[in-house]
Image (tube, rainbow, N blue to C red; front, side):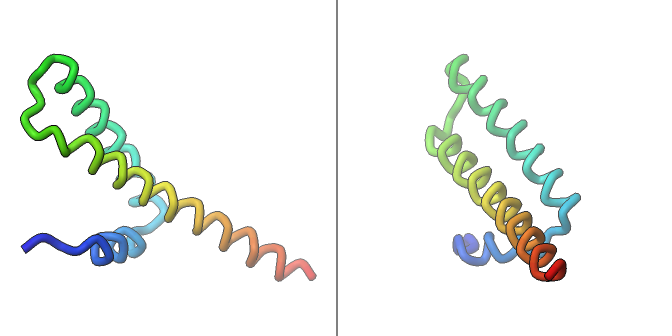
Length: 79
């Protein structure tokens, strides 16, 4: 049985910053590969590229949330 979207996001949130960056890079590479397959008519699952784009968006959102949290914590400590 496939994981729910919520479970996937929770797993992504548990990644360290370095692992998150690696996952983002790997996902971008996967997306690029899928785009090439699509252009050369080798792509068999046409629903895969949008799913990978959503994964990239989720990962970047988590990265941005962490940056905002760090900024807020740093700003609160200066006062």
